[in-house]
Length: 355
View (cartoon, rainbow, N blue to C red):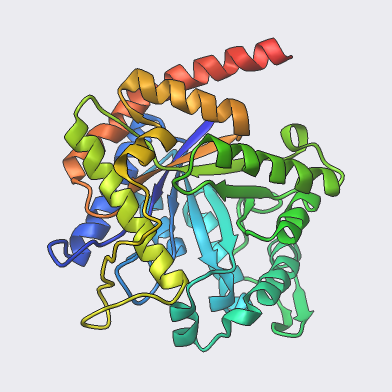
């Protein structure tokens, strides 16, 4: 079982400077490597405080010089906002400077606010995403690549700096579209999924959907598909700490949904207002849904979720809202010291029994 940290680089208000947010993200990555996490993942968003990470590939290039072992992933590069020639060249460069540690997560995006400012129609994002899926494997594995699609055009081209990983970095597909996920399964890419802030019922439904996607494309989900699971989780005996983390998780949900559904409000054109929603989960609901509580409670809840979903990788959200940095660094260390070893031991036992 692999574990990662997912770093959104979120700013909850002007009491956090952009420099503090980025510095905290860097520090969390360094501590995650020391704690034994497998991967650090970085988001991509633009033009507001939802995420201050405009380029996960730039963040990975920087963190490659600050770390030596941990793998570094994009979660995700919003492909419709890129030109394929530059994207391919930067992927090759980043895999090289990281010593072959790149995990390449890709998505089609969902915030129309961003697309408008890049001059891209969000209605075309799915089609552009699929054309990128044509180009990326060819561009990273062939000396010369050319492409003539409806949306993307690339004359015969070769990237100067080739990837170190052979034949290419692992590709992680994120999508709510089962057809796109199915293509990822057929082409032997990895998948990245989430149940947001929901509980076991939603996780069970997610497992059923993934099973169907795999079966419809001639694969067995457990045997043939590597997929990761993005999850909010927090271990502490201090209820105030847990509540602060859950409050940040709910803040993220509110801002994400307001941007997705075009409800976002801002007084200055940048800082998105946090507006409560009638569908907001209560803290009590979140405690029931998520792995939060004492160390043992978190271990038990994580094992319960793993038994339902059976992912190969779990990415924990460590940077969201305005979580206190020192507290979150201790949390990362706690996972490395106690929680991850216990979960890995139990999962190994479960797998041995199943075999």
